[in-house]
Image 1: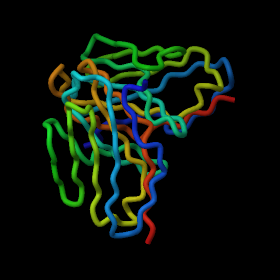
Image 2: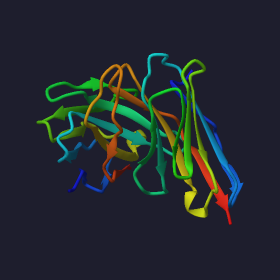
Image 3: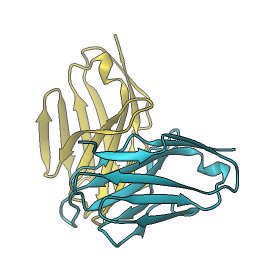
Image 4: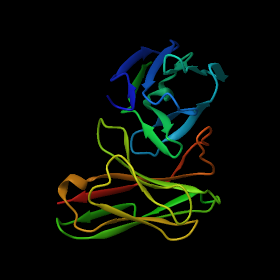
Length: 110
Length: 116
C-alpha cells in the first residue's frame, strides 16, 4: 500500500461545477496535510494546508480532514478552466519526510 | 527574494556520466528536499536534509548522493547516470518540521534531466 493515495483521474467537470479530489494516507501519526496545484511544466504551488479535523475554506477551495478515517479531500467550487491542472496531496510522515500522492489531473470544460 | 533556486534548468547526459544538481534557498529554511517527478507518478522523495549537517534517504535513493553544504545549499549528485534517471528533479525547502507540525514546502523551478 502506498503511503499516500489519490484518485487516479483524470477528473473532468464542466465550468461552474464542484470538483472533488480525494486522498488517503497510511501514517496515523501524520498531523499536517497539504494540497498543491501543478500546471504542466511548472513546479508545484501550495493551495491549501490543513492541520485539524474538519473543514478549512479559502475562497473557492475547501479542504476537509478526517484523521480517524485517514482521509483528506479538496473541493473546488465554481470550477474555472484556469483550475485545470494536476492536484497533489502531500502528507509528512515520521516528521520530516513529506510524501506525495501520484496526483489527480483535473480538466474543467468551458 | 529568489526563494529556491535550482541549476541547471536543463541537462542532457550520456549513460555513465556524472553530474551535480545545485539547489540554494535564501529563506533561512532548516529542511531541504530533493524529489523526482516522472509521468503519472507524482513526486517521489530521493533524499532530504532535516537540518544542516544531516541527510537521510527518501523513497528512491539508489543511484544518488547528496551534500548539505551549509544551511542554504543542498546538492544532488548522480555518480553514473542511467536512462532510468531521466526525470524532472525538484528541490524544495521548508522552515519547520517536527513530529506534530510541518510547514509547507517551497519548490524550485526544477531541472529537466535526460540521460541517453
